[in-house]
Picture 1: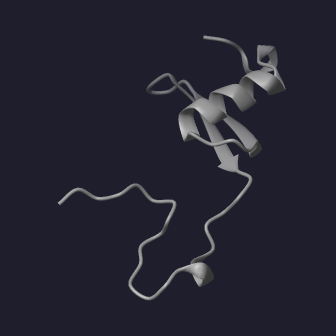
Picture 2 (picture 1 turned 120 degrees about the vertical axis):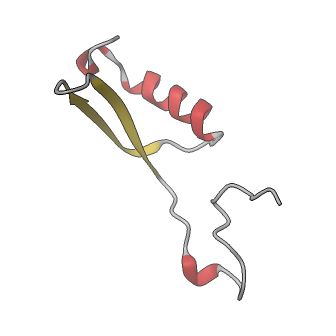
Length: 70
């Protein structure tokens, strides 16, 4: 595991683009680490663009949300 100080901005951008299937940059990058009772390390990315609920049509679900299988 890499330390957050050892990861460059370009590495965050590439990883975010791979995970989110997006072409923009993350607006914020947050690192979370805890040791007790479990050792948890995570990275939280906040996207540059946000879904705007006012642009949805009546009855639509969030366009950013994954599609449901029925």
